[in-house]
Length: 114
Length: 117
Image 1 (tube, each protein chain N blue to C red):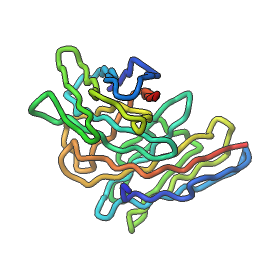
Image 2: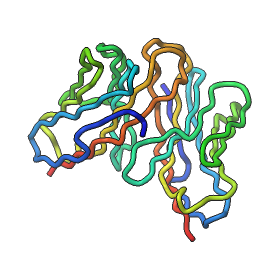
Image 3: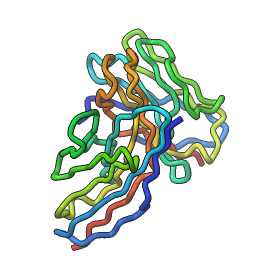
């Protein structure tokens, strides 16, 4: 158990819909990362938040957005869903400080768009 | 910009045989290197990481990796695999600049290891 909690574990929704994925980082971790894992794109970094502020942005679509709340949990919002958005979405966290700190991953949220 | 190439997408191997998973990276800055494992229907678990010092790094479950700066490689090895090592393995890099917020990882495409009895 990494200590990173993601909900829901599985989600099936229709095209055009909007979903929210939730992540609770490990206790004490200020940074939250979101990654998308799909068969054709592999593991892609989407976005990073640190203590409530956006810190780095990767290959995140404009239809996607995220935020980190004062209690440090984070949500990834996916809207106008397309079939190609079907993927495993990972949240990860680590503490501030030296580079090379281990990033801990949750078990992911499986999104299927039908 | 950084990139990671895992040269083998799939590696079948017999139980108790050795395995080597190849990883090469490209970066304009110094990097830290990581190997993660993903067992079926699970998240990513850190196997080992290279930050500095000895270029031979030992990790969990009997895995080790060797950092070769001149060849920009970080190959993962295990001398004798078990059925339970069947999983997908990901090589990753992050830059070494110390940032208060931490450093994101850039992953390779993964290597699926199938251990056969």
